[in-house]
Image (tube, rainbow, N blue to C red; front, side, top):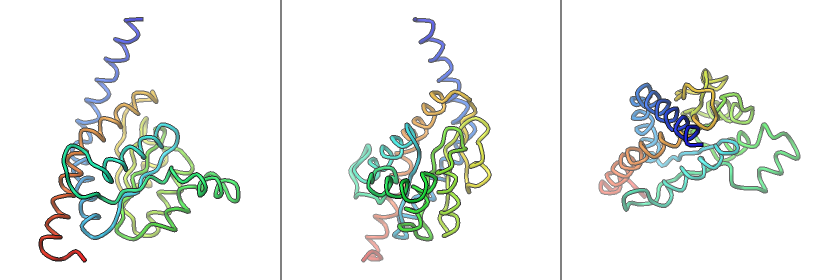
Amino acid sequence: MDKIIEKALRESIKVKEEFIKENGRNLVLFAEKIAQAFTADRKLMICGNGGSAADAQHIAAEFVNRFMLERPPLPAIALTTDTSVITSIGNDYSFDDIFSKQIKALGMEGDVLLAISTSGNSANVISAVKAARGVGIYTVAFTGGDGGRVRSLADMALVVKSNTTARIQEAHGLAVTSSASLWITSSSRMVSKRISQGIDH
């Protein structure tokens, strides 16, 4: 039993180290894109399935409520939470459309979409990215393995080079917690500057 846990720990550390080493610069760029969106009165939308849906809600909560520091709430929406919308779209149309129709209804040019898929091949996540790009939304994919189909569709893809779902999700979690302070600090600084200059209405 101890050996199983130790093996999982070693694998997790290795995957996370490689992910951050390869994607650190893009995480900074992602933070800047989010900050620019918030400063322009735009928002962050997040989507994913299963554990990735839980990650989407976690990320949205960090922006809307607080993370590490006191600051104004920031506009982030998880597209995984409205059961009436999701089930009506799934029932009347297709489960593949549950995110894309919300993006078409709520999204605006200048928004940012974070699409999470451990395989990179989730049909509804791919549809979400296509819909977002169609209306001028900057798209970022958190994925794993070889990146899947979403890798070539998103404006930016951050790929965890592992084929183990648990290791991919752990690396995504680290990406969020390690860079959340950067995302939120950058966003808060730009929004506060905007308010102090009297640009906000």
